[in-house]
Image 1 (tube, rainbow, N blue to C red):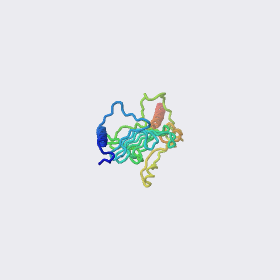
Image 2 (cartoon, rainbow, N blue to C red):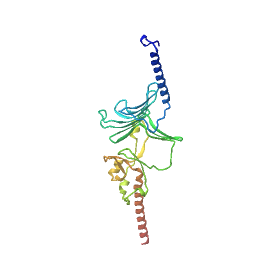
Image 3 (cartoon, one colour):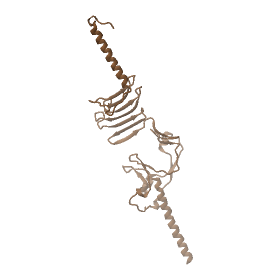
Image 4 (cartoon, helix red, strand yellow):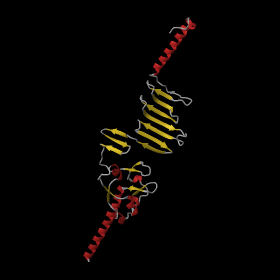
Length: 276
């Protein structure tokens, strides 16, 4: 660069040299920052600012603080192609969402978690969650329910899904989990009136109207009408949802015990008539 006429002389050279030295210091500082270590004091962001890192192509890599959309605060991580990898934020009570809430979004559209007014839910969208261990995995799929592969057991079922909120509970039978234990009074005549049925699953029929797969079981409404409500599962609104099938063994045991008593009574009567 040649100096203008007014900048000729040693003053211009000194100013240009100072600029070059300043640029060199800034370049060295930037180079050192690529491997910088933040001490225990951490980083303080003031006045509503964000801690922001970018890729060399200008894509935003990580942000901690207010979101770009301006509706909340949180953490965002993205790849160099502007694709979201992880997003977690707290929505502010604005006109956009007056109730506020929490939101977690991971790996594109695969996992979405949110909380609104205390109602937590998980939206699996188009993909699934997959937990792998050894040769098997357990997955949760958006439309296919819970998928378990290569993991089998001969143990009995010990889980219960609450129809009121969908929560999964571990089912237990030990006395240490029970209070006010009493003998059950089962209406044996009502148990004998239960109606076994076969049926096609409505969900399977909707997916494949020509399916011929049938199941055997009972109708929860029938048990409720027979007064066997202790074996019927209801939701919070009192509506019939299902049958506690494992507990029906108690009803069948009551029938067997009743028949055993009747048989013994008949045998005693026969012995008495023979002796006389």
